[in-house]
Length: 441
Picture 1 (cartoon, rainbow, N blue to C red):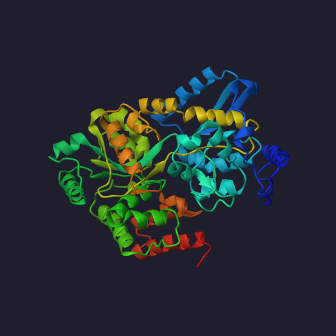
Picture 2: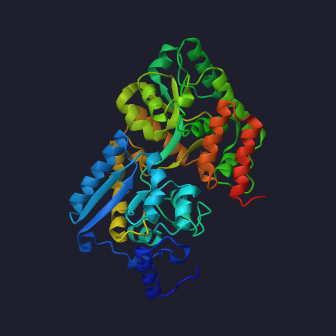
Picture 3: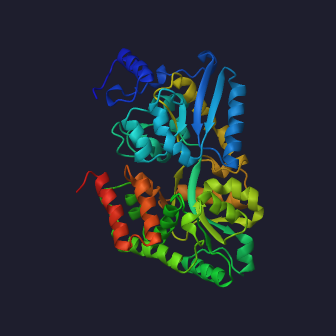
C-alpha cells in the first residue's frame, strides 16, 4: 500500500475506510492522537453495537456492571450488547466484521487466523493514536500490547500497530478439589512426582483423577500444553507457540509430551468417554465434585468459586512454564461510524476502576491484580498471575503460531488421543502446519 503522509489524505482515507473497508487498498488509517475526539459528551447521540463473549456468570456480571456505569456516565451513548460464547463469537465475527451490519466493537482472538487475518483484510481500526490520547501506552506494558499488535500483513504477532486492548489476564493451570485431596491424605502437589502420586492414589481410591471433556476439541490443547510444560523448556515452547524460525515439533521433549497424554489416558486418569463430553459440561461436573483435578483456564475462577467455595484451589503446573496471556482483546471495526465513541468505551472498560470491578467479580484483571483484595481460589489465581506474568515462563497459546494452528493443534490432539495418529504422525501433522505457515520449506 502506498503510504499517505498529509493530514487531508489521512482524514480522507479514514472516511473512506469507515464507509467501505475490507480491501487491502482501503486500509483504515492510523489517526494520530491529536485528531481523535475524547470529549464523549460532544459526540451526540450514539448507539454502539458490541459483540462480546462475556457469557459465564462472573464475566456477565462484570461487563453488565461496567456497561451500566458507562451509560450513566455518558447518557448520550447507548450500548447494544450482543453476547455469544467464545466458539459462537469466533465462528461469526469474521462474517460480522465484513458484513453490512458490522458491530462497532468486538472481542477478537489474538491469533494469526483471527486478529491477524482481520488486520490483513483491513477490518480493524489501528489504535495507536487512541493509545496515546488515552494513555494506554502507559496503562499497558509493552508485553501486553504486543499480544494485540500486528503489521499490515497480519503475519507477525507482536509487531506493528496496536489493534486491541484486553481486560483480563489468563492462565491455563490445574484446578484441584481441596476436600478430595484431604480425603486422600494429600497436599497440593508441587512437583511432577507428587502429581503422579496423587493421580495414582486417586485412581486406586476409586476417584476420577482428571476431569476432562474434549467434544469440541478445545480442551485437548490445554492438556497437551501441560504435558509440554513437564518435558520441554519455556524458550522452546514459546518458539513453537509463536512460529519462530528455530521452532520444531519432532523433538524428544515433544515426543515425551505426546506419550504423556497417552499415558494419562491409558492409565484411566481421564474422564471415561471424554471425546463425547463437552468442555463446559466437564468443568461443571468438576464443580459438582466429580474429579480431583481439572486442567483449564482461569476464566473459570468466578464460576468454580461460586460453585465450590473454599473447596476449589488452583496450581501452576510444576516447573517454570505455564500457558497464558491476555483475555480476548477488544477491537474496533473499521466499519464503525463512531470509532471515537468506541474508543471511549474501550478506555472505560479497561480503566483502573474497571480493574477493581473485575477483581470484585472474581475475574483476573490483566492489570493491578496484586492491588485487588482476594482470598481462597481467587488469591491463588491472582498470585499465580503475578508470578507468571513477570517471568520468562509464560508461554502463549499454541494457536497463535500459524493461520490454521487452532484447528490443526486441536484436531491433532483429538486424533492422538483417539489413536488415529501415532506420536510421530501427530508431531508430523503439527510440523507440516508450521512449515506451511512459514510459506513452506
